[in-house]
Length: 417
Image 1 (tube, rainbow, N blue to C red):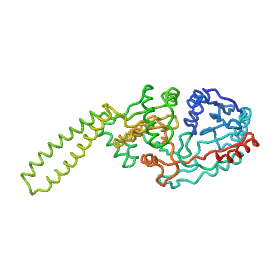
Image 2: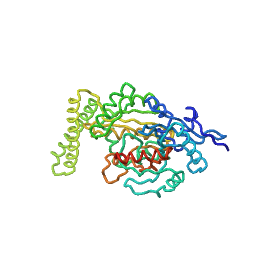
Image 3: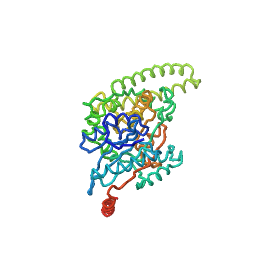
Image 4: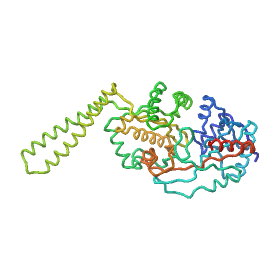
């Protein structure tokens, strides 16, 4: 069967990627269009046989001092066990890269190296066979990376398998007790979720920027979020969790009134039967409940006065939906409203939407890969009960070997290796 390496049309590429098991948003046609809009040089390449497309990749370029690099972010999409196909794709993509003056190719396949539980304990044997497979193709494997990044795809991520979860009740049972508790609180607070329109994006950017400043990382630009909105269309979901102070305060005050009535009746019983301890115990229980509601009402009243508006944003997030998975990308939470647990309700809604849409994997995306308590986001993500996944990492194949050696030497000398 004849194999042919070609540049693919957007239609044939999109059809192949959307059905491939390794497909992900960074290899999607929408990502290709986004890259072009933001001034990047990108290609859609693939391999066909007599039956159509059998391998493909979205390739983008990164400029270095000695020439461009060809980057395969979570690509390519192919059956790595098919040695003939892999060998053909490697050789032909290298030729293609050379034609375009590339210095080297960097592959970051969407392939798992290890899976772990929430504590970092291995759930399976490390995928060293894949590293050997790539070495046979003359790729150099870069050292594994740990830590968080906002400039590229993470080397570690946290995912939840949605297979067999068909309704809200079955999904709720998979969450930790803490998440179940927070979701009950969300209902008490009256937090409402709202999908954003394009005109809301400056408010989304304000939220993510504030969060980035608090946590000391670099946020994306408003232009980036607008381009994602325009390019991904219905595949991109921007969500706000919002609190209506007036409704919340009214609800709390109504609970206080109801508790006052119960306390008054209990006081009558205590006065009438002073030796019966059960009425006193009930009184203390209801009085304690009342104190909690009074505190909430007072805090919310102060917050509303400080905000100067009735409805405030508690938290927000951006998600990308693919046939293979839903990916949680960027988010923010206002520090003063953390006690309303908005992020938990947002995640719950998107997990249930993914399951309802028949999507089998929910990707919480980046974690540091460290399970020693230093990763601030890990506890939030693991509370939804999934598993950690380390990818196989970065593989380098020099296109111009001598020039590439000089490039690596310069990087080492300048301390950028």
